[in-house]
Amino acid sequence: MLFTCIMTTFNDGDILRQSVLSILNQTWSDLEFLLVDDGSGPETKDILNEFDDPRLTVLPQTNDGLSSARNRALHHAKGDYVCFLDGDDVRAPWALSEAANVIRSKGHPDLICTMGVFSGERSQLSPFFDDQLADAYIKSLNAGGMNDLRARKTWATAMEPQSANKYISRKLIDAASLRFPNDHFFEDILFHGLVVAHAQSIEILPKTRHFTYFQRALRHQITSVSNEKRFDILGVSRVTLQLFQMHADFANESQRGALFVGVLRLLEWCDASISHYHRHAFRLALRETFRALDPVYFVIPDDTPDPRGDKGRLVEFAKSVLD
Picture 1 (cartoon, rainbow, N blue to C red):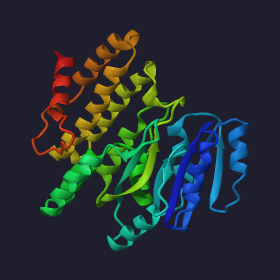
Picture 2 (picture 1 turned 90 degrees about the vertical axis):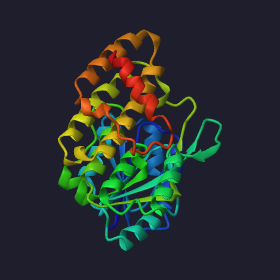
Picture 3 (picture 1 turned 120 degrees about the vertical axis):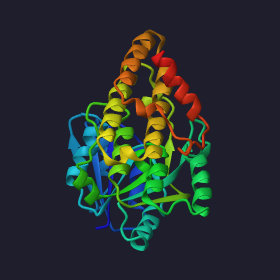
C-alpha cells in the first residue's frame, strides 16, 4: 500500500470522530490507518468501536506520551509513505490523492512538504504559520532558485516543524532510524530537522492546504501551558542541534541557519510565556544551552529564508541571553 496514516489519541472525546473520518473518507483509498490509543478512558474506546473499517487498526497502550505513541505506530507501519495527524485535527479529503500524484510524477521523493490551515478558538480559518514562507518559496521557485537539493533542504527546514505537513518515505525512516524523542514535549522540531537532513529528494507543495490544525478552548495543549513542561524545549533543542552538527548538512550554511532560527523561535516563545515562578531558572538553563553549542550556529547567513522578518530579532534574543 502507498500510505500509512498515523494518529494518536488521549481522551480527545467527540472531536476524535471528525479526525478519524477525515482519514477514512480520503479520495485515495489505498491506505493503512494506525491509531494509537495512548491510555484513553472508556469514552474514547466507545468512539473507536463505532468504526468498522478494515484499514483502521487501533493499537492500545498504557499512557506514555505522544512520542511513544507515534514511535509504536512507526514500528508497525507497512505503507511506502508515512503521514501523521493528531487526534483533534483533520486532513483535507484530497490530500492523499495529491500526494500520490506527486509521488508518481516526481519519482518517489523521500519527503513531500505541504501547507495547512489554522483554526483558532473562534473557529476562524486562516493559513497556517507557513503562509509567508510559501509565498517567498514560490517567488524563488519562479526565479529558478530551487534546482538543487541544498536549496530545497534549506526551505524545507525553514517550514513550521509540524508533523502533519509531511509525507515521508518509510525507506528513509527505516534507513535513518528516525523516531520521536520519548518523554519530551516539542518533539516535532527534532524529528523535522532530522527528516530534512536525511532526505535525498524533496518536493514542496506551497499552493494547497493538506490539513487543519485546531487550537482548542479548554483543552490541554503544550501551547496553552506555562509550567515546567516548557523546560523540555531546552533538552530537545540541544539534542536537535548537536545531532545536526554531526550530519553532512551542517556544512550547508543556509540550512543550518534555518534550523537554528526555527529552534530560536521556539526558545524565545517559551522564554516569554513561561510562568514568572519558573522564568529565572529557565533563563539560566537557556544560557547554558547556548554556551554548549558550536558558535557557528550564531552566524546566520543573509540568504537564510526569513519570510516572517524575525531572524534579526531572534539572533539578538540569543545574544542577550549569553550576555
